[in-house]
Structures are given as structure tokens and as C-alpha cells.
Length: 495
Length: 129
Image (cartoon, rainbow over all chains, first blue to last red):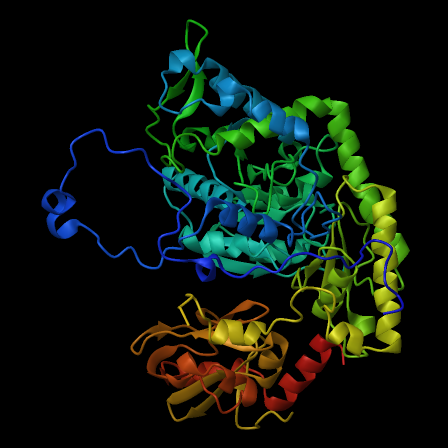
């Protein structure tokens, strides 16, 4: 391991078994005061509904619980430890100011059932965030309800369907480029549409001629990610929009990659009719276990009658309220009004940055991705030379000659102290390495990453076995994913 | 790997072997190789109608879930139940581990599919070898 990095060092951390294994009968982390009301016979009260056997619940003391979870937490890798270049996921820093604001007493202790009269502040947050997101996207209206990106996609397509139904026919299918996020075809199928694949051209973009040939009056919408999953901006987006609109279809934009556009261009200006945003990607709310997510859907005027209800309105006396009288609405898509805690954080992020700050963020995200591209070009194969936006996609073609694939390189990267990049996606690049640094990374951290990647490439040339059997420095080595999937053990049982 | 000459192939990497108006359908050696270790196969029920060019199920590997596209239109008469507990049979020998058997509605439509030689050429181009 002569190439090991300056970033990571082996250090002692503690082993920890399952909490069930620590259990010892009668141990508890609580002690109740003596009962000062008459005891109730639960058997008599509940009859056959009373559950006597609670299964195998761990019986442990408080310090054992605390140590159990604290020890496990030290095994984590998180954005707060280092670069998390998981392409397409925009694992950016979650600013602490977001957390300060969301913990303000009136917000943290608010309840969705408290009367509107004393919820004006919360409603004002919904309204202000909506206005900011409408301004950023160039759209006309928005719902904040969906709980995450794919949920936003479904909400968007439900509106597309309602729109076409109101015109007489729901239409039959959704066009989706082969570079799309996997959730797009899944969403179309969930909403009852057929999926038709659209091939990319040699630049990794939508093939305009192919689109023109496939577009007809059976197509409800095109679902497009822009920039697409290669990190490439669809330069002919206006032509794409015109082709779709000429046949009465709608243009759906998957806004997962909005981190490359904020403050620079607006989807509403280049012909998008409906799009979702990922507040947990672009707008810095926690992501990947720390969520929940949030996937607002912004729309053009023509789709407004179909918005999920309720919507926030201003009453004649100037106060804010939820309006439920929406006869053409696709209905409620989430309890209450979505993941409110994320709205506070996203709004804090937007207001803390301001328009110029958000624009700078976008520029830095693109600059960082291109810095990595430039430094690693030649070391790793670059299948598409089209300019990169916020992420760069390499392939394992050079290393595959030695039998080392993208997954092996990713596993080896763990030894160097980094979270892996996204492997084997997008599908149009065989053996893809998809790298997204985001604007959060300082040059120093990116240099460590570049050094690690170069070092791995050198190892592959000298001794491919190092990568093929990686990781070596983690608590468990390469896992047998195949057996785990074919013969899963889903429950702990006492020995 | 040789591709049986009495099979026809799709560009989505399924094979079909016909005998009169009945046919057996599976995925190719190249498909199983690209997918890697297969862990689950989702197949239609006996009696289901399938249509040429449309999906009829999916195959899941440790890497990805891929749709299965039918090479022909017809009715499912038999499903390879072994694959439910032993999906690795596809990795071992994709050309004998069949997925479904069907009664063809229109045996004539198979003429547009690829021959073994054409498929081999297509795969060589796709994989860049």
C-alpha cells in the first residue's frame, strides 16, 4: 500500500455487535414512579386483543444504548467528514445556519393542526419559499407537498395526465431519453403511461431527428433531465420544447441537476411546462439518511387548476390561509403540507445566499467539476467530450484492460478515505464513474481526491489485485452482494 | 461464446427458439454477462398475453434491474419456475435457462429479428470489441 493518501489514517474505533446480543433479562433504561391511580386489568379491558408476547426486544441500560449508537455513528462517512462525490446526488454541505433557524421555538414547536390565525408565520414561510422557487425556475406556480424527487415526478405526471384528460384524452405514453434517471420510467409506469425510450446522439444529447420521428399525439410528455445525467446541457432544449408543444405534448424537466442552473438560466424560459426540484440536493437540506427529502413541483399556468390541494392563498384581509376548493386538483399528495422542516432550511439557504450568492454557487459547482475533469482526463477515459456542467462522467475503459471495473475503483477509493463516486450510471456509459464535487469542496480536498484517483490508476497498472480485493482498511472487506441478495438473512435469531 | 443458429435474437438481448407456432424465450449470454450475477427474475403468469417489442417482465442483478422485451406476440403457456429459487442458472448457461414458453399469434413477425451471425456482429459493435 505504498500509494496511500494524506487524507486517511487507520485509527482505533470500537467494535459493536447487534443491540439484541447485549440484551439481558430485566435490564431497563427507565424506572417509573409508583402508580398513584387504581391499577387496570388489561386482560379484562382488551380481551383477546391484548398482546402478551412482545417478541425479542432488547433489554439494555441507558449507557449501553448510548454507547451502542455512538459507536455505530463513528463508523459513518458523512459530508461533515469529507468529500462525498456521489454523482447525480448533489451531496453538498448542509449549512449550520439552516439548523439554527429551523430550531427557533415557534417553528420547532409548531403543529400543523394549530389554527391558521396563529400559523401565519409558517404560512408566510411556505409563501415566501414558493415565490423564491418560482422566481428561480421561471415557472408560474408551485406545490411544496411532495416528499422527495420521485414523489415530485409522480405529482408532476399526475398533473400532466389531468391536463390531457381535461382536454379529452389522457394520451398513452411518455418519451424518456436513455440517459434519464431510473426513477423517470418508473414514475411514468406508476401513473399508468407506457414508456418509450429515446436514444441519445454522439454528444450525449437528445437526438432531435429521432425525437421528431417519435413525437406524435399519443405522447403525453417528454421527461428530460437538464443538464442530463452525463452532466451535459441540452443545448437544443428550445427546439425540443417546440417539437413537443407542436403536437400538444408537455415538457417535464427532472430538476435533479438544477445545481448547475440556479441563477444562470430558468427552465420556464426554455419551454419547460412542469418540473420538480430536490430541496435536499440543490437547496442544501440534509440528504442520504439525514433527510427527509422534499420535491416541490413547479408548473406553468396551464397546469395550475390541477395542483395538489390545499394551496396557500392570501385572504381579503391580507392574512394567509389554505384553500381546499379546487375541483380539478389531483388531490392531496402528502399529509399536511409536505416536509415543513425542509422548507425552513431551503428558505434559510436561499436568503443567506441571495441572488448573487446562488449564482456564485452554481459557477463554483461547475468550476469544481471541470477542475476534476481536467486533472483526471487521460488517467481515466472520458467517453463524451461535450463540455461538463456540475458533474463529470468517466468510464473504466482503460482500467478494464487489467480486469478492474468501476466498482473495484470505487471500493479502493474507500481505503483512501473518500465516499465512492456513483458507479455504473448513467447506463449509456458502460462502466461509468460519475463524479460530482458540488460547490462545497475546497480545492485542497479536491486535490486529495485527484491524488487518490491517480494513485488508484497507478496501482491498477502495477498490481490490479489491490483494487480487485479492496477495500482493505475498512472493518469488513468486500461484501458478497450476490449471496446477500439471493439468500438474504432478514432477522436476527438468538443462537 | 457461440450463439445457437436455430435461435433468433432481439437488439434488447433476448433469444427465441420456435417450433411450429410455439416458442421458447430467454436472455442471451451477452445479456447475462453485462448484467452480472442475477438475483431475481420477474416473469408473467401462464395465460398472460405478451406483445412483440413490449416488456413482459424484468431481471434483476446486483448491478441493475432490466426490463425483458418480448421478441414475439403470443400467450404464455409455461414459466420456468426453477428460476425463482435458482436465478444463477441464467448466469451458468443463458441459452438453456429459458424464461417462458409461448403460443405465437403471428409466427411471421419473427422474420424481422436478428440471426445468430447478425446478433454476434451487433454485440461486437455494442461492446466495442
